[in-house]
Image: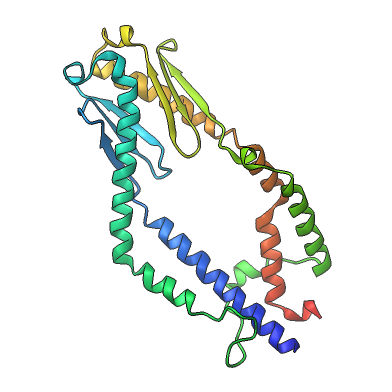
Length: 250
């Protein structure tokens, strides 16, 4: 019975590690950059690796394409177009990566503890990754995990809502709102914009964008902050170290 339990735990560990690797590989396939325009081509937005705007460019003939009051919404539209381009590129790359075959392989792995035909050897863990982890007694790790789950039980969806930050430029005539995941808004004073060149507008938009991105580094949702305090990765590392040395469970 003990061998069956160990075998089931090792099978689960193999499954979890392969699933994590598949998710990481899929994430790595996201195009690092993508560019999109609004429908009239007045503004173009380029995304960075974090899928947030990296740069904004206003066309030299933007006033022929959009009225000044539509400049801010055009930035948001261009961002949406860039996101669509990035997702389409990701989809094309995934089709060529064979991820469906790997996912099918995971579905075929044993999902019942001990259902394998024979002993399952624990997956190899690089020594440089294994040695630094000195797991505490199993009961301590479980106690911390249960305490963490109790703490999370009191959090609701709003606790994990990404906080919004704003960046400003040109004496608040340009204001950009961001969260860690998306461009939320862009406001440009139309009377001021009508008197500016495309170069000056691009400069102001990128200045506001830069200020907003800098603020993102210092904010996180209350839920995310509480999870970080619980150190879930540390607990996971301890569990994996215990699985690599099943005698600790005896």
